[in-house]
Length: 342
Image 1 (cartoon, rainbow, N blue to C red):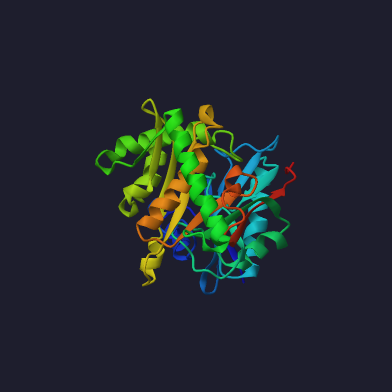
Image 2: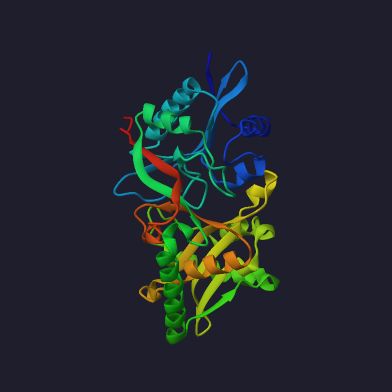
């Protein structure tokens, strides 16, 4: 017998977080999420499914009143169905005309589900979810809203052949010359003044991403909280900043895949997490150069592979190395239209 329970106190929050998921596994992260409410489905073994709902502060989408499902996790399909149906009813009561998920409030938080995989091990910061979770959503009437991929490439470009390798070297040399001619200076992140560096990265992110799909602006404090958590894993030589007359005009935020170390393996791959270019500098080829520069630096540091992580397929970033390596994972963000309750 399944029972739906709304989370209303600390003890219930502990129960909620006891069901493993890609996010909200601790009470503090649950509280920081600014969700409007949290729900659990209980069975005789305990928490069988859980999620949070947002409707007060959500991304804009077309002319819809948006509701969001996030912090999603489920042990089995019956509990998932019970939970997702409940969510649709609750959000319809709030006047929502579409529900999007799974997404922890907005796209700055954990979002999307794995829908296809080559079987590669999960990488650092990846939302590693069971394939059956996507079935939970589609079986409840959700349809794909946006698609994402992660692509892995060999840093020596060996799959391109000798001619391809020579082309990559020539292309990198041309881009370097182009940066020099435009007065674009590239430097690595300065960890001795990390707060100032992250503030500048935040300010550029707000400018660069404001037209992105489902974009929602977050405060500098929220941004710094997210990035401060990963500061211990940063190798500053892998975080490249592009400056023009002391103005930050682009950055490539790259991290070593420390998940490999946590699995007892040698860390031999890097993750290209975030690429941003100032809208005023589109056409300067800054993004192309930063990707090539990180590849070159990572190889010199002894890394063998790079993961271009979690790229939305409609984005220009998916064109980088589109014919190289392979797609190791596909992801989907889902949506379902709702009818407002009278």
